[in-house]
Image (cartoon, rainbow, N blue to C red; front, top):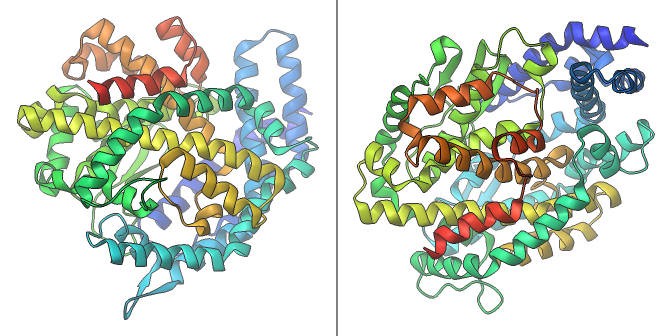
Length: 506
C-alpha cells in the first residue's frame, strides 16, 4: 500500500505548481479558461479513492509507531487527496462556472456589463439606487444559474459517498482534525458577545454613508450598503492609490522582510483586462516562486488586502527549502491565514499608520476603529457562514438553503442579503472554519509579539526574525499547536472578537 503514497509524493510538487499556474493565469487576466479537468487527468493518482485508502492505512501505521513526523506528513497528504477527490468530481462544473462568469453580460441601466465589473462596482458605487440595481443584477443572475453553482456544491456529497464517510462534515473533521461542533459553539458565543458593539458602529457607518440609512430590524439596510460602508469612502483621501504600495514596501524593507524576498516573490501589478480586483497569492514553487497579483487601487480596504496578501507571500517565501515536500507545500490553512491576518491587522496600530502613511493622530485613531469594525464584520459573517456551510454540505444545494443562508447573514450582519448569493458565497471544503481559527491564532501571535517586542514590534527586526523562524516550519504545526506554543493557551475565537470590541469601545 506504500506505492500509491510514494507516487503522490513524487509528483506532488509538479501537480501543485501546475495547479497554481492555472489559477494565476485565470486570476491575473491572462486566460478566461480554468482547465482543471485536464490537470486531474494528468495526475489521476491524486484524486483516486484508492490512494486515499492507502494514505489512511499508512497514517494509522505511523501513529501506531509514534512516528510524529511521518504521521504529520501523511495527515497532510491524506487531507490533500480528500480535497482533490472532490475537486476532480467538481472539475467540469468548476470549468463551466469559470466560463460562465467570464462570458456573462449583465443588464444594468442601458448597459451590458461583465459579471466581474458588476461585482467590483457594487461597493464602489456612491448612489444607493444604482448600488441596489447592481446587486440585483448579480443576485438575479446567480439565482438563474443556481443549477450550475449547485452542481459544484453537490460534489461535496459525492465525495462523501466516494470515500465512504458518514457525512461531509465528518469527512472534513477526520482529515483536518478540526472539531466543527466546538467551533460552531465558539462562533455562536462570538456572535452574542460582539453583537452590541457591532450594531452600534454599524449604525454609525451607515449614517456616514447616508443619513437616513438604518440597520435591520428597524431599518432597510441591505448587504450592498454594508459593502459600501466597509470601504469607508469618507477616508479615501488618506489612502490614495499612489501612496499605498510605497508605504507597504517601505515598511517591509525596514522590517527586514524585503517585498520581493530576494526574487522569491514575483509581483504582478501590471494593469490588465479581466484581472481580479482583489489581490491574491499563488504558490508555484515553495519557497522559490511565489506570485503576488495586485490590482492597484486606493482606500482602506485596498490597503487591508495588500497587507493581507503580503503576509501570505512572505510566509511562503520563507518556508525552509529543505523541508519534506508535504511540509513545504501543505499545511493547516489557518496558520498561513493567521500570518496574513497578522500583517493586515497593522491597520489597528495608530503608530504604524502615522509612520508609514503620515496620518494625523485623529485620523489614525478613526482608522483603527474603522479597521476593527471591518474585521469584526468579516468575523461575524464567517461565524454565520460556517453554520450554513455545514448544513449545505449535509443537506445539499436545494432552494431551501437560500432562506437559510439569508437568515444567517441577516442575524450576523443586520442587513438584508440577496438570496441569489446562497451558492456563490460559499468557501469550498468548509474553509470558513480555517478563517475563524486563523483569527483566533492571529490574536495569540500578535499578543506574543507585543509581549516580547513591544507594541511597535512591526519596526523591530528581531520580531521579523522570530516570525521567519515560524515561517520556515511550513506545515509542521497546526493552529492549535502553534497557539499553545506561543501563548500557553488554546485558540479562542470569542477572545479574538473581544479584542476587536475593546477597540471599538475604547
